[in-house]
Length: 281
Image (cartoon, rainbow, N blue to C red; front, side, top):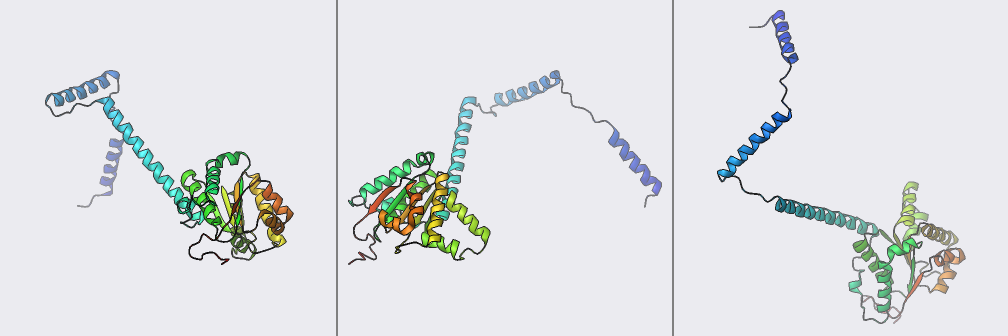
């Protein structure tokens, strides 16, 4: 039967009265709390007496929990490191074969340079405190210049989680001067990355050129000075010896290279690329 308006109003008033009725408060006095604790302890004692409650060693449980917590933390750290390593490798864009294991330490032209490379890696943070360092790797095509620089980059990423950009100079020029990167903001971001990455490796600087265009040599000089100010290290790879490189990049740019007090690594001898052999033969 449908209720009248008066009956509905009476029901609502009854609900409101019940809501206003004070709820019973739990007794939180020390005596009451103590009584609850005694009840719990009494219950546990009965369970233990009946053989249904196992005995626990508090300190052993604490040790097990701490051990598991440490394992969880180590696993989380390892996972985070792996994810960061993958991001750094993607940014660096390195040839996966450019590693020290693929270099012949028994090669008389390589052994000392590999040792120099490892010293550079191990002291990388020290160089940052000194304003950054530089390596100038030069020699004929195919003698292992890019491989050596790439091996350094791989070790810095895997062992020290450093950020690396490996770029051929022609690619830098195309992106910044010839519209490969169309948007100005994108070019600005790329330029900042070149300035701020932990290690910048520039390959084939002035390759097959007696002289860089002034706009390019000026940009490279400013880029190197900016990295020096930020205490960021650099590796420059070229087929020019230092004197020829000086002529190719000009005084302004070469002085920026000299400001790093670079270590010179001259890779000589025939090509070490088995697929092309000695290009001079």
